[in-house]
Amino acid sequence: MRVTKRRAETKARLLDAAFQVFAPKGFGPARIDDVCAAAGYTRGAFYSNYTTLDELFFDLYDERAALIAAQVTESLTAPPLDAPVEEVIERTVATLLLDRDWLLVKTDFLLHAARNPTLARRLAGHRDQLRQAVRDRLASVRGQLALPSSIPDVDAAAKAVVAAYDGVTVQLLLDSDVTAARAWLTQLLTALLTRSS
Amino acid sequence: MRVTKRRAETKARLLDAAFQVFAPKGFGPARIDDVCAAAGYTRGAFYSNYTTLDELFFDLYDERAALIAAQVTESLTAPPLDAPVEEVIERTVATLLLDRDWLLVKTDFLLHAARNPTLARRLAGHRDQLRQAVRDRLASVRGQLALPSSIPDVDAAAKAVVAAYDGVTVQLLLDSDVTAARAWLTQLLTALLTRSS
DNA sequence: TGTATCGGATACATGAACGTATTGGATAGG
DNA sequence: CCTATCCAATACGTTCATGTATCCGATACA
Image (tube, rainbow over all chains, first blue to last red; front, side, top):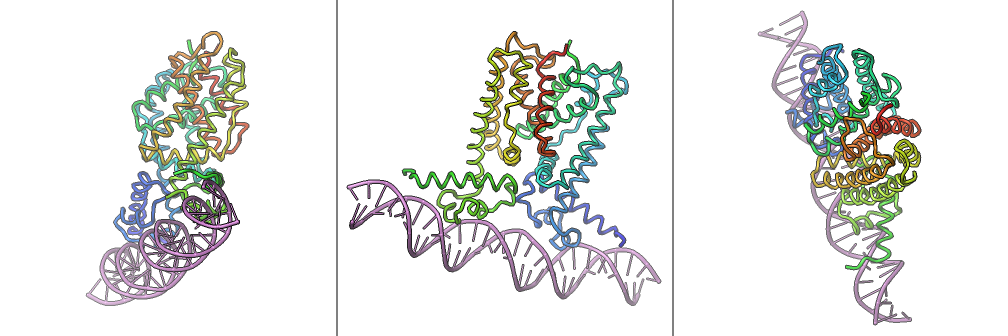
């Protein structure tokens, strides 16, 4: 069955609306009606495109996760390819998009994934993708990385970066201070990726 | 109004049941009936003690958070008071209780707090309490800590410990591998709290 | 032991969200 | 321009969770 232009437009508007509803309200109390109203439709539009709200939620996650992955990859390439670690950290964190709304939705998704193996693998896939991008970037750092002795290789380092990111995320969700989050992330990454002089 | 023995017992059983329901199911889809059934009551018992499910949820968080704080404090005192950092890390992480069910409930609470300033302060208070305990423990480490240069003082170090814990939490929620989480947490903490030789 | 209060059970009414079946307007194709 | 298909709107009926009002057994207290 062919996807008509109209249908695609409707789906897109539903996805956007879903984000605007899920971010402030959370998935739990969100109703199908809420999303439809936010998109300027009635429930008929929803049931013509999805069968359950979960389905829409998971679609939304996939779409936004792809966007974010692209954005992070872009930030990673901001500093010159052969720059020293300190500069890579500094400039990457500076251009990194830290969207609290997205973090809220992503954490909601994390909780679902933590209780559902299928979703867990989907999320793990997304995380692996990001981790891999970080790994590749670290591998290209000038003059062989000098990692702390407890971080054996580039893979562990990439994992550490993700963990630091997750840690900062939690703090950001609580205090909404993006500037502080950036500074804090820089500190953590520096400690994790460089050998202190 | 006096609190009778019977009432206290009922509340306690409701709290226990709430944990057993919220952990696997999450707060969103949990119904008042679910909790009451799990506790062996009907809804009458609930409405006689609470007015809303949020109220019970928040009470549950406070209760369990206090338990966890005590448990963490205990773990922190496992290693000898004047032991070197490496040993403090090793033994603390080894005895640390990593209860996935609690992490699930706590993350649920985190999401609520992220959308509700009042709850956010409650959670921040709990985090401060833990951070403070870590700080005090670090301060007692033998021979002045040699922190990485990007971590200026013991306060920053304590914050870093919390961030690492949060980062590992996310991973643990996804893969349920407590052993790996422990090893990973040890690595991260070592990198964050010691000056690599 | 008798009595008054307390607390959980039960029954009922209400409202909200859901899913479906049907309609009618829009749109694409000839 | 006509027609067939598509898709969102509408209007049901149903289910489910909720909150309340009442009842009755249990418990505390004299």
